[in-house]
Image (cartoon, rainbow, N blue to C red):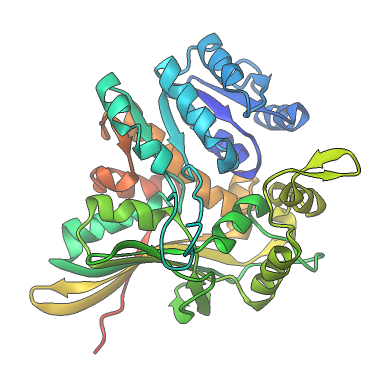
Length: 404
């Protein structure tokens, strides 16, 4: 398999490192706007031929297509902020390559009633073109990170093996990670974090379909496994809610994230000041997006690993019935930062996001997952993915939560 890796930030680096150990991956083109960053990753991997470096402006579709054709890639792996998704997605289609991303095309809130009604939903642009991809016999696998991605596979596994009927699929994400030396330092792309946390969260219910609510709504305390403990989680806009109901029968789907009071306070302040704006404004004759300024002022999550301590947990809470009796389970994966740094040289959050994409490459390459069109992870059988998790050193766990 030959891969055009668009973006070698934290997650892109982790994908490349994990791919380097897989002999069936013939070549990974390290393409980034920051060519020096790509060269750093190339030096870390120590193989110039297998990991060539290319300058790429992901906002220029013709450049993406040119590189894909130059290296005759089988897969275009999108590992940049989702503002670039449409052009990367369309470029992969034009060159006839398989397409992966870890976050779908962006949403746009409803103009008149944003906290009740959906406007443009996450992935609408991509699903509108599903027929074209299917007709061409090509696959666009959207949302194949950890959340979305692994969590969606867990939801499919719950439907196929653990439940007769599912009342609610609830993605629950929490951590006890601390970052020393910084008053405020997100451990993931702040651009993406602002997008998903300040947009109206989407909820799906069988009778109402998709609808929205206010940011940070419906707080609840969820107890995470492996020493993380109780964390308050709140509604956040996320792809799983847009993906899972397309393939899995349930009555309700939600996504809740443990952000913490300080993080929520910072996000609310950024919004109040207009610093979450992703559209460019004129600043003394220079066109700049306020959100890009915020990102530039904060430390790069890819370089925070040595300052991070603790664990992060991603998983799918499922409530329903089995054999006529109520049942609740939490299917999860816990990544320890110290272990990830020692094993991969990458911090836990980006490593946990990356491994799912490499497993999916493995399954596609070896014919265990097959399909065409625009598909989410839950469109595929879950067993091959989950069987490989331990092999990739990210084993899953299942916590029985059924009330007494």
